[in-house]
Image (tube, rainbow, N blue to C red):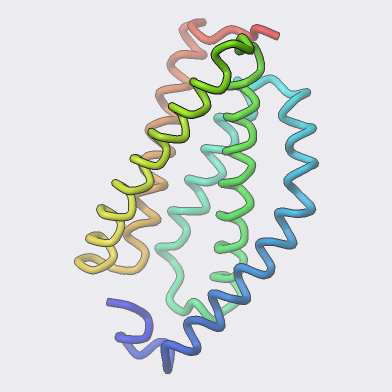
Length: 168
């Protein structure tokens, strides 16, 4: 049930206004943060930056469970934060992906990565929509947070076992 259907928000227009405000603030934040984290991703050990970005996004996503009203400032902060952290996560993974890739296969592998990313996004939209409709508005965020925690645990096991070494 949406915040409009539950009576938390008065109308769909109020919901759309909140969305537009979040998007505007997120775009400004991303314009400021994106280039900085691109540079940081080039200079930082990916074994630290990538798990850290997954941890931060998991915390942010799971925190949506405690949002009762999307018009209040904590909701705004979480929405902007998840947008910025997701971009940081994307940048750091992309930098790792491209760092030592041979130029003759770079386009093919980036294309494959984007294809499977699109498939993953489609699956998330389908599952997230069902979670939203059948559980609560916070449920899709918990789904993202859970997946991020699982990826974080998986990467920590690989790092702990020495299977992921710094290659640059």
